Structure formats: structure tokens, C-alpha cells
Length: 427
Image 1 (cartoon, rainbow, N blue to C red):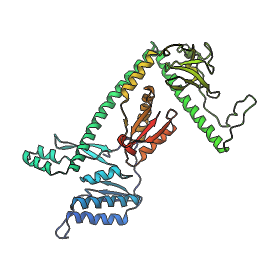
Image 2: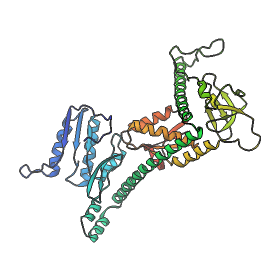
Image 3: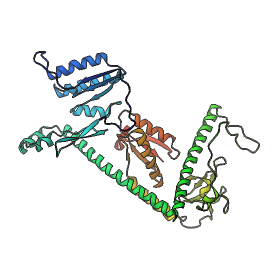
Image 4: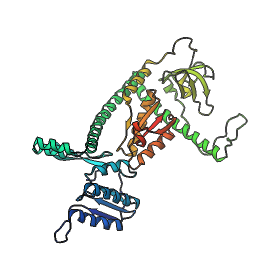
């Protein structure tokens, strides 16, 4: 079986080169290293952009320092020629090379020390930790021999192995935390729907309204981007206006937010014609978020309203705003259900989102949910860890953040945040 998710694809290769096993022989005067190197020389002469190169224990059979240096050079040259390379190794230097070299990523098949068997679970993004001492101990090697062996290991190598072991523990904890977070998220959604209405029909309608609002928001943002592009193409000139002061609509058809059906108006408090109409300078309150502020702007094209207060600046749909009296003392009243959702979101948010090893599509789906949680928790920043790898996941995440309407800006992580293997979104 191919260890790949559904939908994964490989290109059609013109050539496949494989150096697997050991072909040493006395008759040919070949050592293990020589037999491997003879194949590598042939691969380097013939490999090109449509080649798949499989290298088993690359650089093995000679001095580890020189062998790992040769291995790094071979992989670098093959990548420069456009070949796709899969290489196995036990060298720590090569593991570190994959963490810093663009276009290279680590992977490992996990090993169960208790049973001395591989689990065949492929972990992408983290190198495999050496299990030599653990296996030797399980097989009965004397304790004093093991202790002496551990003393001979360099501090750098020992530190690397400890870091790898800690990373694997963190990965396991992350998986458990994700499962727990998914359960809590589902429970929170159920509670939110229940709080919105006591009837099954109202819960279904509320979910549909939220979905329609999301689609309408996407359409509004797309329209804004198109208008901006038209202005740029026109050399900075804005579209012509009609006598009524409204911009002429583009000739292409646009999506617009569907009107709220009368039967849905009975299920919600969002009835645009009810009560005083919002105007700039009045005080308004977002029914959804439970936050209030002075109405600073009303978009004539989209109807979205900007609320400003000491603690936040919000842009919300006009139908979500009700006019309220200006508060004279103390903070404005807050919706308890919304406040509880914010508290729970902050508790579930964590310090960062780790997307290493994820497929781009799955990673962006998780990122969208994480940003929702961060915004609901009123966080200022969101730290997304994507690793170095080939750079594809990093590019996809940064492009997604650049287009996100609630992301003010982004920057690479600082050294303590993961460097260029992380991106910090400013919300």
C-alpha cells in the first residue's frame, strides 16, 4: 500500500533509479560503500527533471562524517537537476540538513520499542529518533555497557535525540488535544444552537442564516477586490457615478445577499425595519457579538456598519445592528451567551496552531477554524507553525492570510516563535 492520503498524486516518471540493499562482493573487490557509490555515480550522470531516485542508507559504509557530507552533496545536486528524491539514513547530520534545506523535509516510520517492531505509521515533518540504546536494553545488553555507551555519545548528538523525542511527545499530545478540541467545539456549537432557540426548526434556520451570511460576506469581499482592481487598471480613477451619487455597477453579474424571508424574520430579532434606523453618530449594538459602540461609518454599497468603542472597532452587517441609547456610566451591557462563547474560545485557543505535515487543503481548513476561534477570543495575534519543508504549505498559508478580511497583517515568526517555519497573523 502507498502511504498517501486520498487524492494524492505522483507525476509520470521517465526514469526510476533505486539503490537498495548491499551488492558488495570479493570477486568484484567492492565494499558496501563502493557498491552504493557506483550506483550513485550512474544516477548522477542520468537523472533529470522527470526522474525518481530512491537511495537506501545514503552515504553508509564509510566514515560517518565524510559519508553524511557526500550524501548532502548528492541530494543537493539531484534536487538542482529537478529529480524527486527519497533517501533513508541514520545520520543526524542529514536529519539536520533536511530541517534547514529548502525543498527537503524529514519523515520517519514510527517504531514500537516495547515490541521491537515498526508501526508503519509515517510521520511527515519530524525526523526519526535513534532507538539503538532502547533496543539494546530490550535485548538484554548489560546495564554497565549501556551506561558506558551513553557516556561516549557527544553532547550535540544527545541533545538532538532528546529534542526529537520531545517533539514526538509533543506531537502525540497535540493529536490528543486536537481530538479533545474537536469534541469541545462540537459541544459548544450544540450549546450555541440550543441557546439561540428552543425549537429544532429555529436551530436549522439559524444555521442556514449563518451560512448565507458567510457566503454573502465572501461575495462582498470579492466585489470589493474586483472594484479595487478596476480602479488600479483605470490608473487610480474611480468608477463613474450616476446622478444619485452611486457608482455604476460592473457589467458582469454579481452575487448579492438574498433578502431575509418573512418566516425567518419571525425566528430572529434581525428585522431591518424595526426600531430607529442606524445613523452615523448614534450608538449601536451588535446582536451577534453583544458589543456596542458609536456608529462611525455605514457603507452605502454593502450596508456594513463600523462600530467604534474604547475596546474594539467592529465591522458588522447592518442588519445585525440595533440602535441603543448612549451609555453614561460603566461598560455597555454584554450578551452573556456571547461572552461565554468568547471565554470558551480563549480557553481552547492555545498558544499556536501546528500544521506541520498537513496537506494544504486540510491545513487551510484547520487554519480557518483557528482564526475564527482567535477572533472570537478577541486575540491580537495568531501564531501558525508550518515548518520549512518544501515551502508549499508556508506559501499557501501566507496567501490565505493575505486574502483574509480579518487579518491586518502578517510576519515571519521570531526566533523563539519558530523563525521562518512559523507565521504570525495580526488580527
